[in-house]
Length: 95
Image (tube, rainbow, N blue to C red; front, side, top):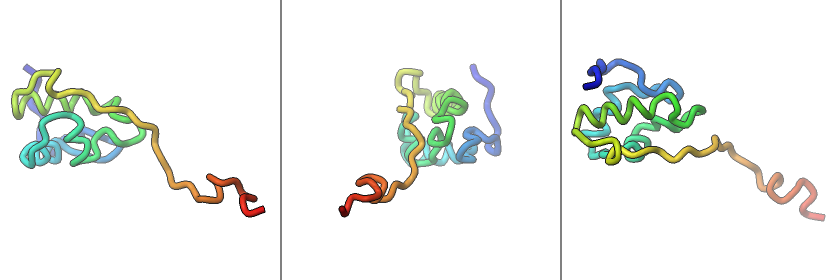
């Protein structure tokens, strides 16, 4: 079995999510990687879960006994930033 991690261990470095944060999300009803991601932002940083997803899956297995298929995987998305309407329509869209 995987080694138990202490609550203060940083799971997601990008979003600064700890083991305690993941456990709290599980107490609130999270049962897979996606629901952990929605509650904690783990996996939403620049690496898109490449460094933390395995740890999130491990914590889910230890805390509620889900198998790897039930824990699931997150869907990677590209980092987004706000875009102005001027950029979308072109700088001279009023002409």
